[in-house]
Image 1 (cartoon, rainbow over the protein chains, first blue to last red):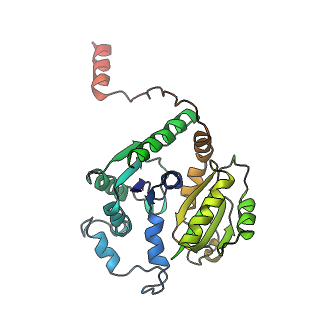
Image 2: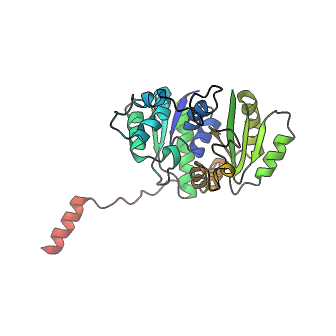
Length: 145
Length: 138
């Protein structure tokens, strides 16, 4: 079982396909869960402590907008853990923690420079493309075993 | 550790969110379930949720999609009832991907040949555009 980071890191389709093919999808909600459900919350309502921006500083300099560093404090450790990646071309409707274009550029760059197997795709727009989309993901994930 | 998962049904699936909720109510599992417009949110111990997810997926293997969620169901930090209405953050991503789910479901269910896709039209390169301009003006 490989740890596969998916981009967008909040994608339902990608995380589901990775999980149903027997691998572990590395996604942002898992990182968020650790921050919001720990029994000891130092900084309610969300457990954003001074440690979080420090984590973000490992990936982006201090003069980079705080939103980028905040997002990287969640996504950066996931990238470090990844053994493979599936990147879907920006569909134009990324929102929430995947809604910052500069962060997304940095995330894609860090994944690409990590030297792990990467599958590049675009979201399908018809049935034929969807078949190819699923087939490519299935073949890629089977190749990781 | 307590985990939360979204169970999202494709709009073409014969399984309704209420069917999934009833299946969970009738199961032996000690989990919290909340029905939503696009499926259900389930919360419980990780091992229990993993087992339950397998059973839920068996209801419609190609039409049910499952993803992780950070916040527990009904969490006041995210629940729109406590925030004065409006979609909660993160809903827009699910809404956008939900439109593609029927195509993915059909692709997962089909076992036929993989179609060859026609090459997509590429935008005109600047050098070719310059050539065209020169040809027209000369």
